[in-house]
Length: 336
Image 1 (cartoon, rainbow, N blue to C red):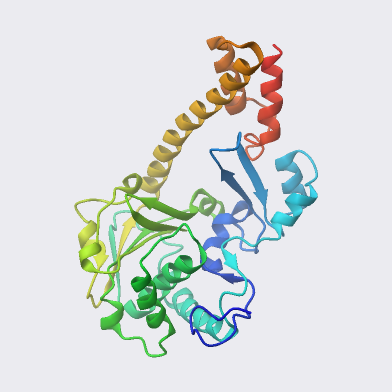
Image 2 (cartoon, rainbow, N blue to C red; image 1 turned 120 degrees about the horizontal axis):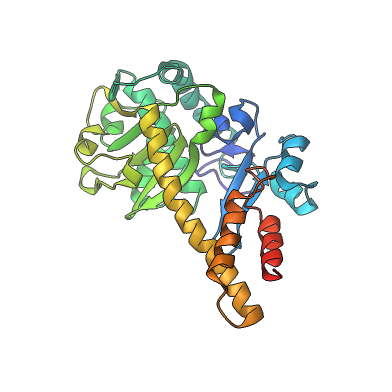
């Protein structure tokens, strides 16, 4: 059995370690924003696959799964559903898992209730005295993601610095505050369903790695010299980025993006992605048409294919972009 990545002493005997805190991301991933573990649908977009593949988690209800796929799941899909999102097995030990839990509980009990459930319209900044609790919590997300997700890149020296700070039983604010840390709070107002409009994942943006963490966006840097502004879809503001990058502070500052602005920013991103998707589906049909007829398809037929995928009726939103549906429409249009 491998050695625990945190303590580097004990065997990594722990299964199902969430490297992004489950209590934060659960409402974003779950059906209707619910708080029950692993009941939601997820979507995987890939450039080398003709479509967007729907996936379900292992506790997703049969009705939701069949409503999405229009059929019962396959054995392979059931196997994939057993892989818990944003979690790993045998990377950390049970003792270090207890350290993670203590850090998470401090934040969930003492800080999160001051954020969620409030409308901060007109409040661009929030300041908290619980700087140690906040820093340990968000740096924990950065550290574990850097260990567990190969797409999230930080330097080995930075990773080791984070490891020591998280493993310490007596965290020192000066040491924690020496790490530049920028956390945006995406104010989410409304019922639990509104959290499903947020997202979870990592992004690389101009050589910066970010964590999109439901209603938070996390950016950490290994030194003040490495702090670099990136636009990131308009969520960062060049005028305030340095100000909200906490460094050697006593109080921790969150930049707050109000609910309506957040919705507009995600919509602008979605619109941009939608145009990219239209181009993607055009390429699918052009390639298939040329393979069969050795010529370009009529423009009207090409646009009819794209519009049927995007606007066709009598289909759930979740199954609209399934590979099965796209292939079915493609064959229908090719034979038109």
